[in-house]
Image 1 (spheres, helix red, strand yellow):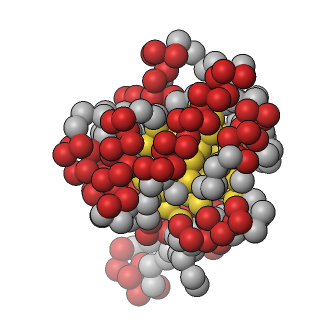
Image 2 (tube, protein in one colour):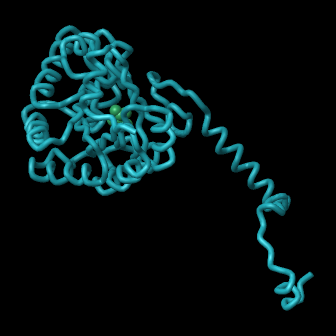
Length: 278
Ligand code: KIV
């Protein structure tokens, strides 16, 4: 099976084919969505909230991200795996950014995602592209800057803000990013950016004009027990399924219905005789 690469992602934009991306953090989920045909799997730092129970994505460490990235990489055959670089893993210095980004690639990621814009971020992207590490940029609402932004506010709500976002996106593209996530913005703003970039844009709450879409898989499967963002679509109800299965199991254990004969091992007759059990 041919692995999806940056050329595939970039050709999708050229051919006006939408890119379908989801997050995944564990082996079974990654395996199932890869087999279902997802093209890009982002091991998002949303892992902090949806899997590890932190109240804030900024609390996740690089080491934690690496554990989950390598689990995903062991499961995936076709999709491109993008490791979302966590808070302060790339902001301190180019040296420490490159060390952490290198470890993400060594753990099985095919690309990394970094949030933000400006000279420093551009220099990290330039360095990555010089040494052949593909980078997905990320602008609009950038969760790692939640403390500065002050909340989950929609970005790019005016003409000036839209022009400014395009300017940032163009600089990130010029630095070598091969794709860019646009998060939480009006779709007209995302359309303007998408039409003026040659790299694909991936929407995360930025409407349907982007070249692709990404959602947190736990929202899509109805597994995350916290609040679902309004822009996410729930396709299943794993919460109810898990609760139902757990309740049924508890009841079967209490009633003695579990384990059944087919779920039980037995000693051979001669051993039973020695133990004097009938
Ligand atoms: O952390 C995350 O899950 C993300 C994406 C959904 C873009 O950054």
